[in-house]
Amino acid sequence: EGLRYTDFHVTPMCSPTRAALLTGVNSHLAGVGHVAHSDPGFPGYEMELASNVASAAEIYRDHGYATMMFGKWHLTKDSHCTAAGPKDSWPCQRGFDTFYGILDGFTNLHHPHRLVHDNHVVPIDRYPDGYFFTDDICDRDVETIREVKASNPAKPFFCYLAHGAVHAPLHAKPDDIARSRGAYDEGWDVIRDRRHARLQELGIVAEGTALPPRNHEPDHDVEPWEALGADKQRLFARYMEVYAAMVSEIDETFGRVRAALEELGEWDNTIVLFTSDNGASREGEVNGTTSYYTHLIGTDDWEADLERIDLIGGPRTIPHYPRGWAMACNTPFRLYKVNTPAGGHSAPLLVSWPAGGLPAGELRRQFTHVTDVLPTLLELCGLEAPVERHGRPLREMAGRSFAATFGDPDAP
Picture 1 (cartoon, one colour):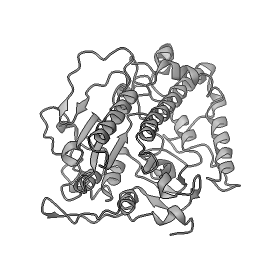
Picture 2: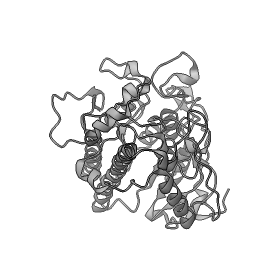
Picture 3: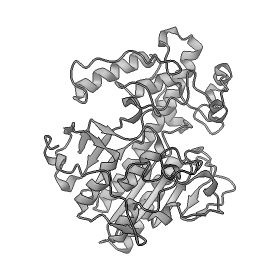
């Protein structure tokens, strides 16, 4: 129903992309030049949104919108994520009327380590049986939109739904994993070739575009699938089955959000923008892992992972797939998240707005960047960007609107 952009770019890591998305300002100038954990003391690496940039939520709230966020924030340094704060870089202090989700980069989707609602940590002794974070944030999203529209049907809303999936850990519900069983037994080389052909068939990649050779750089290389033994193939395929189930769960839950908007009569006049924050991740390295935290410090024991294969996807493991699957996910581009070649920063961009008359299903090939998103949304909504925040001049947005490309495929 919407447009597909084939040359959209983000930063190669999640926090900087989120900072640029929400401010329209390049990530270093927005204060988040790296993932939001430590603060080395330099202005471009404060690891929290700078005080001289305005967030989308602040702008929309100032124009009378209800503002809401659900899911992953990851724009607060670790030392400020506890109940003790300080909370000046928590979502509600950056313009969101309500927030429900995680401040951190990732969590156990079956048993989140720390949920935050607005400005307080949610006290949880035990999660209910069958709890799943993707479902939870979807339910909160629908509930909040319904509450706003029930209270004031004329009030517009700005909603930022930022999934914890499909970041590691690879967690999904058993039935969804079962539906993916066997889908990746052919391995990443065959899957990559098939995806490359499909991209050309859809017109996303030009007919005749060559597929680069398998990634071969030292410490980034990928083995041929056929060179793996049967045990590794079985284990590695399981990781991707769970990843696929996570994607399906995002799709299903957004379907529920859409159904609610249709029931409320709001779908046609809701602008929906879908993207990702970086290319596929190589953090699972050569063999993947069922223990992400120990893997980050160099532990690699795929045979022990094989013994836990039936636990992959459930709450008792913290899995990540091998980087061969990241190569396949980044087809046809080279390398991965954190790298500056296209595999690190190329991302999908889908824009839907039925009432806006967007040509359904068409492709747009203009170069666009994550900093262009907020200027585009402000133009579509007829809103002016502010020039100051709390009496202090703001940095000018780096991005520019790509709204002209909605109707004109040749617009620059």
